[in-house]
Length: 369
Image 1 (cartoon, rainbow, N blue to C red):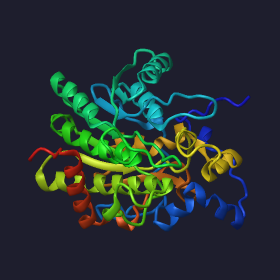
Image 2 (tube, one colour):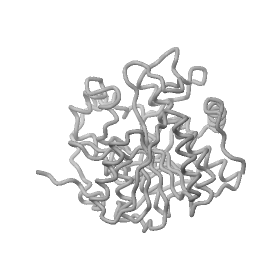
Image 3 (cartoon, rainbow, N blue to C red):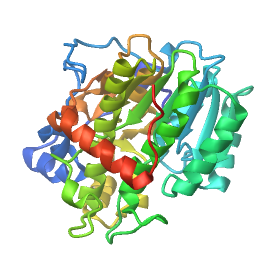
Image 4 (tube, one colour):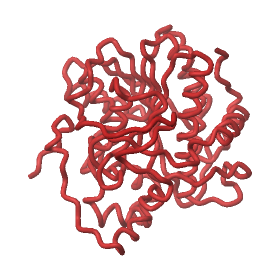
């Protein structure tokens, strides 16, 4: 039996890639590859959202994470501990950062799974400082309560990883606040959380925010139907949310620079990783689920998919406003590299429109500089 790949060892992160015909690649487009490539998302040489030209990143694994002792880290999601051949990206982030000495908080809505994730991390990383806090990003009351608990602790925050995410199901679902469920979880909740944690981040040491994006994004946001009330499509719901997250990541970084907040904001995507996103979303009987089952070699392990996020979060070379993803096979898999954001993600007018819309939906704004 093959042992679990060690993300600290580059040689252990090489997996066979099938010889894909053009027909197979086109079929795989339902997983989101085509959408990602058309949007201009590629690994290797690229241009960051800040406009600087980039070259390549030397081989980088969790073994290259600098010592994190003393750093306070919050990861949304993070309860996707390994089961069968799947795992969550946030769990892998939490495990790697705890191993490096960070004080990690996992925040998710499922208390049972969150506490089990903490138990497993402590078992894999003896002496790790890790805890669980309940947070339902699709419930603004939960976001407010969580943020209030963080504020009451009067601690600073050094790293926020906006990782939690869901894919839509076949039928449109609404959050307790009446928002479309995917946008509520992936974008609205994270916007509200980040706004309310900004004072803690500004008290942090070299504070960073990392938003987890995706290879697949929409070409543009439908501001006239942001909640997809008139024309719901589960794939569009996910693609919209991931474009929105990139817009917010780059807009927060612009506003931080302009306002002197002192908080770096970056984004990363995992390529195509073997997580529970599809099984828990449209399901294994969906077109995405079919490819998930029938093309297993295309989906890299979650531990490898987490590397671009960890690079953005910890590497001194990761630049504010940067975007990172796997560098191999057109960004589907591999060690971290520079990713080129889709053109729509760099539109400051769309970002400002989204910002205003989210302030109106949440009734929460970022604190003044």
